[in-house]
Length: 62
Image (cartoon, rainbow, N blue to C red; front, side, top):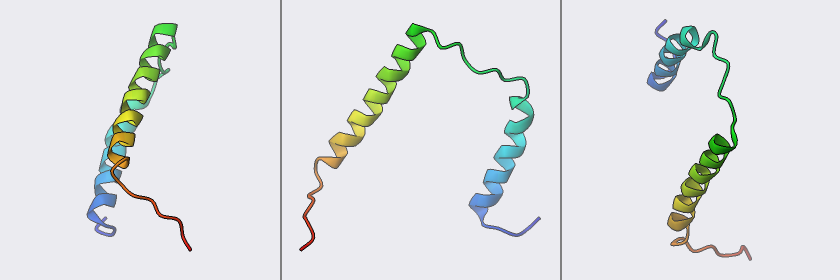
C-alpha cells in the first residue's frame, strides 16, 4: 500500500501495533485518588495553555 501521506501511513502502522495489545484491556479503576490525579493533570495542562494564550491580543471585528 503506497497511497496516502507519510502521516497517514505512520498512523496506520501505529494502529496495527496498538490493536493487538488493546485486546483484553478493561480500563482503569477510577478510585478517588486516581480521579483527583487526573483533575490535577488537567489543571496543569490547561494552566500551561492559558499562560501562552495570555500574550496574544484579541481584537473585535468591526
